[in-house]
Image 1 (cartoon, rainbow, N blue to C red):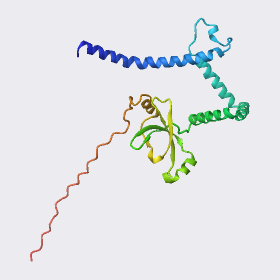
Image 2 (image 1 turned 60 degrees about the vertical axis):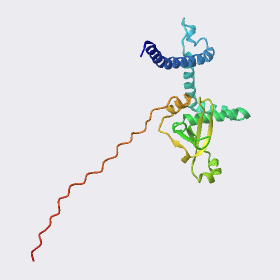
Image 3 (image 1 turned 180 degrees about the vertical axis):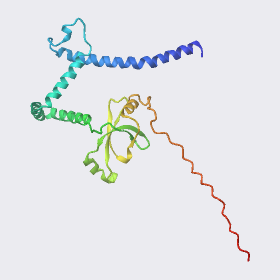
Image 4 (image 1 turned 135 degrees about the horizontal axis):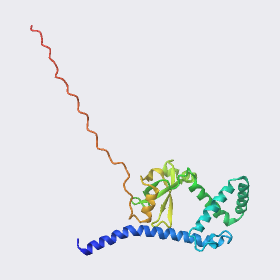
Length: 235
């Protein structure tokens, strides 16, 4: 390999090392700056440490959000907090458009954050949008009983599941309801599945299936002793 080839190889190796770190730091810094820019003006000046220090503290907005959300959770866990939450939800339920948005968002968070939730726990493939073409998806839960009843003739009474098929990159997606036998569960994690979708299939996770063991050889039969022939009596 010549000098140009070695320099090119070193340059590509440097990109492989620095690009993931730089992009991760940039996204984290952008997120912190975005939260700080919206939350810092809401902090009272008497509680803002930047008014007492000669330098800016990055992440003060993120820390404020974490503290406030934790305090709200602790407050709503008590009797008074639950009572006030119920009253506020009653007011929201009387608003025609707001109640639909609020109830949908609340149900989504309750389902996703539930400890026993099955949403986005399994990565699957199914034939979509036509037979012979397989799409990567995530099981989000069981299908509605009415859907199973309407499709009972076609699915022969089998259970149906909701499968979310994201686009690449995952800005949108499709919700399909398919019989369980048409959904093939993959032995990959949700994180690896999301990597495949976000990269458009460039990043493929390693094969985690157990390697097939070599077939066991048949046991060698034990040697049998030659049959003894008893001498016949001379007639």
